[in-house]
Length: 290
Ligand code: R5P
Image (cartoon, rainbow, N blue to C red; front, side, top):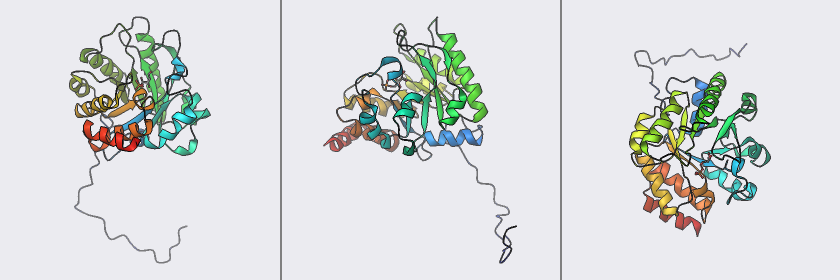
């Protein structure tokens, strides 16, 4: 029993004052349960509603590509500047220090090096996601691909079923095959398919007409960076994406292949969260890389 000595009766009940309404800062998640919201809040900053994810899952189908040869040397020093880490379980367990305390969006499907970008219907055991305490699971979708669309949609569907049981959000990752147009019509279709199949976050690419893609997607979109661009152009892409409705970035090569990855991720962070223009972001990049 609690100590009753000097127990004071409550007096300040705010009778007549309406309950404080609590809007939730992540698009499409207002009706989700507490655990799901907690995980989404670890990914999307509650003050800005945005995120800077650092993607370094490329090696799972591409091997040790430029910038990812030594994740301990090239990526671990960047972790402190990222809001969320996107990687595979192998790299997470082998190299990422568990005391970084960063949310992880874990690559939870399997790929092959033969058909890069295309995945078969192999999904990680949900218990491993729980054991690794991940904040989200990432599943790639090959929309428009006659061989892999159905399999990858099935992966997403299954991941959403399993994630929902444990309040683990799922991010649908739109892969674009070589034969597909990278336009608003395609991304509008692909992002909407992800969301309607239950993805809580969608990863896509920036394109002309992105404002329509973002508006029509009922959950947050984070944009991939794609192939390495000059730093100023990459910052322009981030700025335009945020202005057009993206909730952040999930960027890899444009960070870890930069001439100064630490400066670049900080500049991206400032554009995404603080509204720096591309010019201001580039100035910051140049200052930090000195
Ligand atoms: C693609 O399979 C991976 O999900 C990458 O994480 C994604 O493409 C983002 O990386 P980048 O910014 O290098 O395109």
